[in-house]
Length: 144
Picture 1 (cartoon, rainbow, N blue to C red):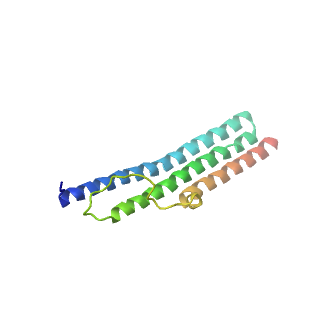
Picture 2: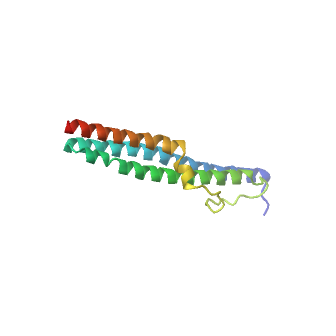
Picture 3: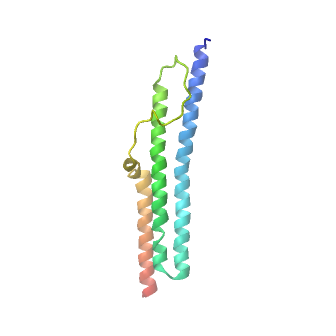
């Protein structure tokens, strides 16, 4: 069975669109993690204020670390799928695409590289610092 070059090009574009939608969804998870992290951290701090316990407010660091870890993992996977996208894009447009969506062909990406990126470290580190400052100031205020 012979498939025309136009049909193969159309199939290649569909394969790239599938990969792009996956990458977009992974990037959306990062924004959701950041939004949920602020909500949970604020709730824990508020709970500490309600109880008049500065140490409880400091526990907001735990969800910040958990969300940072999960966000970094999703960023790492997103970067790997970008590598798959680039590999598919570079393939010959004369062959029928495989429609394979897997990380087997993806380039490796270190977790540390994702965790220290500006979108992870630049968001979660200042948030953790603010939480610690609030806890320290709240502790000094409540004891003073």
